[in-house]
Image: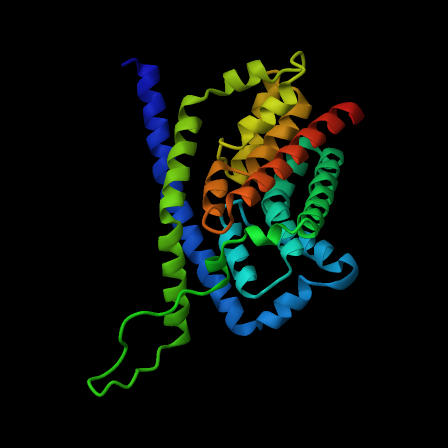
Length: 305
């Protein structure tokens, strides 16, 4: 085995270990915080905010996504909380699309790396397509592709009782933790599987290869970059610097835009996690929306700038 192969294996194992620990802790933390929020914010309140008349719920959902510092994976437990609060399906989809793409971390890094003009274009594209996609999916009746169990909180099991059979009171904090832990166990196989696949691609797909097939001379550079972005799980803090490095190696800026949207909007790990909530037709629709957003933003950016 060559030194390059050893380095690739080490990089793969390193990123797997890092992401496994980080995303596990992040998922548990976000899930628990959502449970705490639901104790203090009545489900009816969330439902009313994200089910506004005359399209207000869609726009509000988009801006809620823009102010939440969630990556694509930590959006999932929040989405489950919205489902259980019976929020509107369309606004929930807007939040799902917008949150990882428009979180404050990625917007700030975008502005610093590519400038305000490019950042404004990116924000407008991501927000506009998210709202349009959420509205369209609701009108097409895609809410029927949400798995039934996703709407219900796991019931507490076990006998919290004394010998007399009377149930001992359970504190709300323990109850929230139980729900969080049961949710986590359900998605753990998806989480680990997605991280493993993403880590293999991260470790064995050199950036030089990406730049070579996605340069300005390749008419298929933008679609290819969008497709490559999905399995390449990259944190928001890493996707912008990586994209800047790829651009410096000769990758077209339209392709860079497509890569960022594909990677931040629909990482492989997120897609696998969504399997615990949605049926296959909704997964396909989700991927079509992100790919369409990435490709259209890439071509439009190339035409305008």
